Length: 558
Image (cartoon, rainbow, N blue to C red; front, side, top):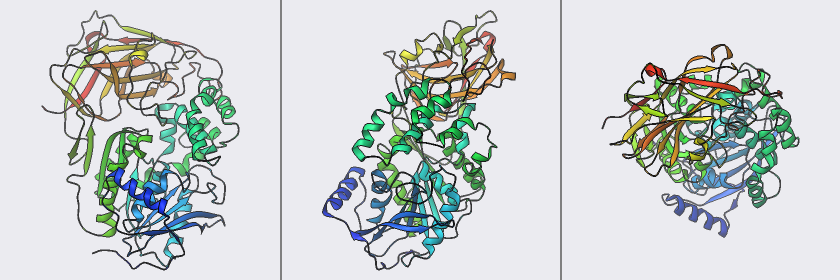
């Protein structure tokens, strides 16, 4: 049974000729099915909030009978790529779309305080939506990143009209993302704060220039101490929330309460389509969302591609849009047709192919590699007299971040040889593989670790080394160690991955004392990391004898 409705009278403006050209070009680039209708746009409609603030929204209305309504809420404006990918492509395929600017952004009233008001503002927006004469009684939500968080916020008290949700790399617990692993994710959230603080200045071109120069401008905030003082100086007062983000480390701080929405995963009943990227900074939360909804019997599907966060809007756009249209056809428009062959759709890096799976993680076997002397990584446990591996971590010259799950464009898969040549990085390399080795799931590293300074971090990274000696990252893990347990066996779960190591390649494991500025360096003194100034190095030992340190991989058959 469909939910189509007759078009309502609208005061919206029709598309211009250049607008039609943009839409048709986008459809060809994304290889989308043909558009089915024209549409009009009503700009800057005021939506009243309970405290008197008015949030502005653009309403895209299809010219023919509508198939349902989409609600998109975010802080990044109603221009640029967001209306292209989250409004126009859906409007010309029969959906009403409400694209709303969050509180305090792009003309919406109130003060922008990231993620503090999204539960109430989302509920008030739905109350407004119910009163619109063109609203057909059912809607879906869609969007990525912050636009995904606003969806989870809305689902803390799910409206009865909500038909389904499409959450793309959208977190539900921001404390876990900002301070995950025990250290502030400095690169991601200093950079994000700077971008948001200045996003309404100038035009699209000046915005691109500002982003291109961000690394140089923010360098003092990334590398000087005290961390908080240096960051606020780099931001020049433009992001007042940064102080709380950098300094409020406790998960139970009231600051984080409206931003920690894990309970929503116990309340959602509607079908949810999740998108993630193997190199996306929110990967672990996307996988948690899938697992918890699946375990409750919710109709949930998951697609994970080889993308970073920012690549979701470029390399991932065609696939995510296709799958989103199919999900909406089934759950909002009501065609009743399920096009997904399986709930889980994953890209296997190295094999360069997509796989359909009934669930995640799939059933796998285990293969263990032991860290050995002379930088070896092998199947046999080293003898009792095997010498340990040692390195020194110096916070005055912290081990740098090279690639990985970063928000910035320099994240993702990157060459590692320069990093691996540093004296504060020890590596263990396996023999040449005589057959492909496929790793699908969560790998585990167990390190018999000793440090002369209990204020210490550990960073491990699994890499593939090709026949030419080029090393590239696959998966990694970071943890700020408990000072009372910094010496002993440390178990680290690496990021989930689906990767085929090619025949002729070798596995390599990196071990270091940090990855800065992805995670803010450990000063080594026990001082508050946001305000501390002094530093102290740590001398580390990794015991190798008799298999004390090992890498355990989830491997598929064949």
